[in-house]
Image (cartoon, rainbow, N blue to C red; front, side, top):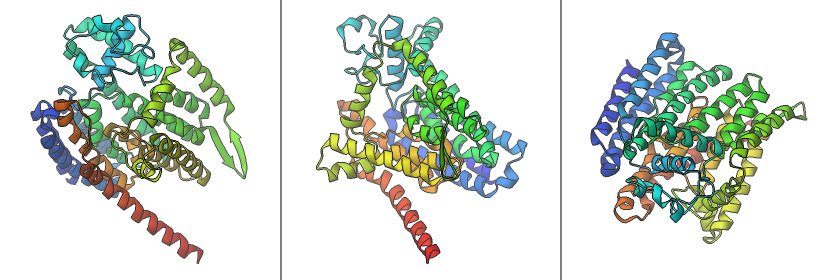
Length: 439
């Protein structure tokens, strides 16, 4: 009954979002409806965790999936408006179809002027080449070649670009079920991912391509727990060639430490390297430019950061120094988490979270990187973060009106302060328990 009420509130919030037609034009209302759905979602997550024994029957799991599919189908008709990413995906497909290299071609180059159409104002970062991996770029190319055969209207084509990544998001759910079984967790905990308004919004309204990398990363973790390290590393390599963030998971899958001895899964590393080289060969002449774009993303741009703001303050506002410090702190965090030999997926969750907290850029959809792992280890402050992250969309009305992307520091504080304070309190309590144990 409790889950039924929560599902009704989540669906009601999503129906209200659907009624807005264009969330970017009604951001305050969108945020209110999103928060309404998130309150119901957190309650549902609590019920699923507390009542997992009774909810882990095949019938209950099917019901959780049916509700999750209903949530997604409800908002899928909406056109992406809070982000310009889908228009950029389509542009990358158009450029490749015209014979261009996405890692060399700049949208603003006169060479590609004849490709511009009604969606041109929505193409983001016109002065930069692609920062996406070659796997995503191939998907952009073939998605465009398909949608151009079905639909000639450019705006409808942009909307259709949501489809492959929405389907990939269903793959996240399927891979998560496999991971939960391998980790010994109740299948009902999949609700923590499947009913998340964040996943529904970012993949079924906005169509972000992160779904593909997340699905592959979760599958790699499941393969690793099932004793198939070679396949796990190959799949993780492909995930990293979608977006770069899964690279922090390699130490957990590639290195084992047992009885004081290290063991590297060389077969998997070599196989993954071979697959990676084969994929990168599709863009051999231009893919090196991705590193330059990523460097600019970490050292030149700043969007909705959290702990990075502290680093920036400590180094006197020097972005390059703050980014360098963040990189080394991240490496130290990953090494420490790996060395601790934590329960399955907990170290991986910590590593991904460290990336998000230390990055100069943390858009709301980036939290989808850690969201499936919260179904394995439901860390409550992070569940709260998924509810508060869309507050970052407060910049959209000003951006559409003036072209200036500028955050309100008070709203950024409202997003991060409760999460970091809760994490700090949990850290203090854990330290006190450890000291009592030593005493």
